[in-house]
Length: 151
Image 1 (cartoon, one colour):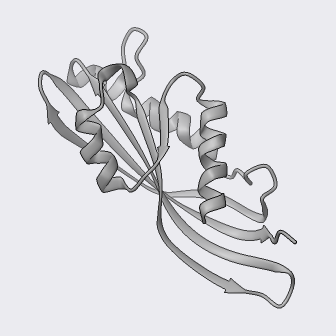
Image 2 (cartoon, rainbow, N blue to C red; image 1 turned 90 degrees about the vertical axis):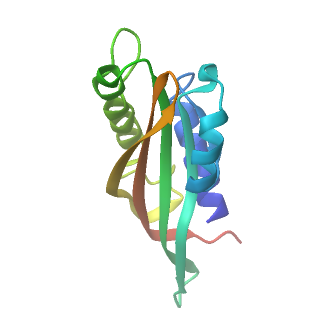
Image 3 (cartoon, one colour; image 1 turned 30 degrees about the horizontal axis):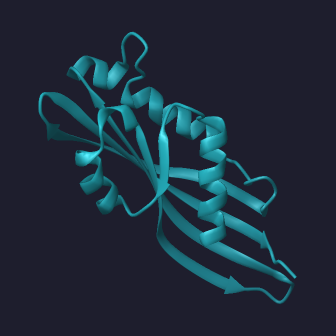
């Protein structure tokens, strides 16, 4: 799972260059930290494991069934911009779509031999952060497939 998260973070950093700060951390910590993050560091994307279930096959491969959460934190001056964006700012819906475009069905540069990342759930929250609107999107994804076993 550690390698999967590292590769997912690298993928997001490569494809979302300059548009977000990306870290590996649990959702609850991301929410707590997010309230304190300076506006210039937003949007902030956190990637974390939700659970892991491994079953070892008789071949030299491991079949993982990981569930991960990708949390997007962003702040906006008003509710309309928070949802649909405005000016140079992307709304939370577009930021979610950008992440989906990068990760969904991705094999992490062949690390997932059979299978890919599939987004299974998206949830949105608004938290108070005066005077702005602090938006959180939590994407749940499943990673199912064979990982190459390193010799």
